[in-house]
Image (cartoon, rainbow over all chains, first blue to last red; front, side):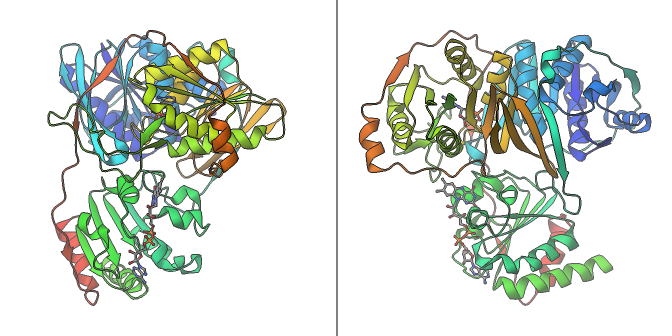
Length: 324
Length: 245
Ligand SMILES: Cc1cc2nc3c(=O)[nH]c(=O)nc-3n(C[C@H](O)[C@H](O)[C@H](O)COP(=O)(O)OP(=O)(O)OC[C@H]3O[C@@H](n4cnc5c(N)ncnc54)[C@H](O)[C@@H]3O)c2cc1C
Ligand SMILES: Nc1ncnc2c1ncn2[C@@H]1O[C@H](COP(=O)(O)O)[C@@H](O)[C@H]1O
C-alpha cells in the first residue's frame, strides 16, 4: 500500500500544481500511514527531481527514456499505471491540469480504480473506502463521492490545496516501464508557448473584463492592471464570442473554471453562467458602474464606478504600493 | 466518414441547482433540460465534416426515456440517426462503457464528445472511451481538422497550445472554437420526427464509486464597498484583510 503522485513539468520545470499535488499526496499518505512516491516522465534535472522531497515524496521514479520526451496521454497513462503497480499504490494523485484531465480516466481504467475528478479537499478514509468532495454543476454545487474500489485515482483541482514544505529529501530512481508500441500513434506536430503571459488556469490572480469595456481597443488598461499584479487576464463569454479576446480567456460555466486567490471582475454583470466558473475564487473584487449588477451579491469588495476611471487609478495605486 | 456524437442531457445553464431535503439528489422540478452546450459544438462539427458527403452522424445518449426530447433536438439539428442506451447514466465510467460497447459493434471514424458535461464536469468520458477501445483520445480540443486518414487536433496546455496529428479512429472532446453550434430549422424539426431512434439495453458495469451527498457552496458574506475616489483603500483591504496581494 502506498500513494503515487504524477508530477507534471514543462520543459523540465515543475509548476505550482505539481507541488500542490505532492503536498496533497503527502497529506493523504499521512492519513493512511504510508509514504509517497512521485513519478516524473521526461527529462528533468536531478536537482529539480530531488526538490519533490521537500513537499513530502520519499522516492521519485524518473522515466527519462527519449521515447517519452513528449506528452502522449496514452503512453503516459501506461507509465503511470505501471508505476502504480510497481510501488503497489492504492491511491494515485494527478493534478487536474489540461494534460491531467486527459490522463486520469485512462490511468483509472487501466487500474480498474475509482476516479474522483476535481477534488477540492482531503479525502476521509473509512477502512478501504474513502469519501471525497468534488466540484459539480459547474461550481454551483459539490458532490461528496464515495470511492469503493480498492484502488483510487484522485484528480486534484488547481489552487485547491496549499503547497506544504516538509523539508524532506527524495531518492531518485530510474524507472523503465514497458509500454505497448500502440500507445505512440499520436504525433505532436507543434507546441506554441505563450511566454509573456501568466497562464489562466493556474494563475493566483485573475483580472477579468466584460462587455462593459465596449471594445477590444480598451483592453490595454486591463493588461496593464494584470501586469502590475502578475495576474492572468480573462473575459466573459460575449467578449470572446465577439472576437475581442481569444476563447482561451473565456471563463464561466461554458469556459474555463478558475479558482484564484483574487478575481477582479471589471464591467461584467455577473450572470449565473459567468459566476459558475469563478465563484470558488477566494476573494472577488467587482468594478461596475451599475450598483444593481448581480456580481456585487457574490463579491467581497466592490467599487461602483466607471471602469475607464477606476482601473487606471487602481493600477497606479497598486504600482505605488508595490514600489514601497 | 461516420461520426458518433455523445450527447448528455443537462439542466439549462440558467438553472439554480438545489437538492432534496436530505441532499442526496438534485431537484428536477421546474428544471429545463438541454443538450450539453459542448455537445452541441461536437454535433455541429460532425455535421460540418459530413455535410455533402455520404458520411453519417449518429448521436448516442445514455439516459432514460425522458431524454428523448433532447435526442430529437439533436436529430433536428442534423444528426442522421440516434441511439439511446436505456439506463440511468450512473457515472462517466458507466456511460463510457455503454458508448464503447456500441462503438465496438458499430465502428466509427471519429467519436466526438463535449469537453465536459456542465452537470458533472468530469472530462472523463472521452478518455475512458479511448482507453476502453484502445484508441487515442484528446479530452479538450480547440480545433479539429481531418487530413486524409489522420485528425489534426489542437489542444490547450497551460500557457499555450499543442497541435497533434492522430490516426483515425480517435475520440475527441470538443471545446469552444471547434465549431459554431447550429440552430435547428423548420425542415430539420419536421424530419427529426421520422429519423430512426434506436433504444438498446445497457451492459452491466461494476460500480466503483457513487455520490453520497450534495452540498451547495457556502454563501459569501456581504460586499464591502469602496469609493471610486479611494482606490487606495481597496489596495489596503486586499493587502491587510484579504491578504491576497
Ligand atoms: C448556454 C449559455 C452559456 C453561457 N456561458 C457563459 C460563460 O461560461 N461565461 C460567461 O461569462 N457568460 C456565459 N453566458 C452568457 C451570460 O449569460 C451573460 O450573457 C454574460 O456573462 C454577460 O457578459 P458581460 O457581463 O460581459 O456583459 P453584460 O451582461 O452586457 O454586462 C456588462 C456589464 O458592464 C457594466 N458596465 C458597462 N459600462 C461600464 C463601465 N464603463 N464601467 C464599469 N462597468 C460598466 C454594466 O453595468 C454591466 O453590468 C452563457 C450564456 C448561455 C445562454
Ligand atoms: N449520459 C450520457 N450519454 C451520452 N454521452 C454522455 C453522457 N454523459 C456524458 N456524455 C458525453 O461525455 C462528455 C463529457 O462528460 P463528462 O465526462 O461527464 O464531463 C459530454 O460532453 C458528452 O459528450
